[in-house]
Image (cartoon, rainbow, N blue to C red; front, top):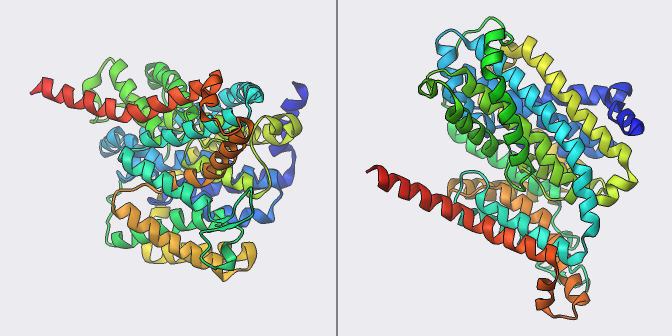
Length: 497
């Protein structure tokens, strides 16, 4: 236990790692403030450059961007009524009305405190539950991992606000991409169409950078004339004793909600913030104030979305199943550094894992300090004209993707997937399921084929294993949930008419 605690202190005891943590937190805040970027796009953008770092430093950079970027979206949500990240959308509902009343500093103070509290709470959940889940995974064989991967894919049906069918189709497209290259068991080329560069498969980095950074650049190019209405603010104020007392139960509740939602594969901060906000309103003594400047509305949304960061890392590290869009990018970073999350990682490299835990803990403290003293300065970053910002991001994307293998083929793939992502988003598809499908596709195929070897080709033997059956049942529930929820909402509307 003492040894693990010392591992958690590594990010502040090692000068180089602390500098990376500091820069990652600062970069995450900047990304979170800029509408259209956020930790997912930012993580994808910085991913190629992490190849020059050792594995621990690379993942600390990505996780600190994740923590700080999730909070950073609250700054613009409150000051310009534009969430810097999707997870801050619910913060706009009460944050901006408070800012219009001249209480922007109060609103940002509560958002900063709630975000840091929720983030630290979720790190504690991560430290406690990730090793337990990893120990349970020791009981898994190839059939159990296959069922787990299927469960992770079916969770795509309820990810975000998109259509369940479209999300599942996007996930299936990601699985298809994972089959490009040599067959993992026969070494026969598949779907390469004679292109030698595809023999080793489609690289993660060109796909991730293209789908997130380049497609977002193309989307933002259609919004160049967007004008933000800003609210003036002098400085951030910490919550008063009265605000703290009034919101403390909401903060505790949202910390638990966010951590739990984060643990569910493929959910993440956006879902957590909406549920946290909804529950804050349901339990509030003054629900009529919500939407007009309720301080507990900000506390509920911001605490929950930041609490989801640590929760989302639980299945990511313990099982290799992404808990959110950004953890899918972090998982990609681990894979390209030769690390495979799971129980063996906890047993063989505890210093790596507890270093990540510590980095997330200290990242929450750092963004609290930076947000408290620099929120006004960070808000001014939105003044950068889009016609300057996005070309710079494009150049950075090209340089990062090319530098990985010094290959123009990777750059071409990045641009192709950027266009694909842009077209899909225009037709209402999310690009996140594609990345999760690409990551889990190899696991699904490998474990299925190995399981069939074990079962001598008898599919029915899957149903003789309790853990497999449990995951299959959960998969059916995950697929059914969006439709049951939709029918419930329709019945509720009919009852109100």
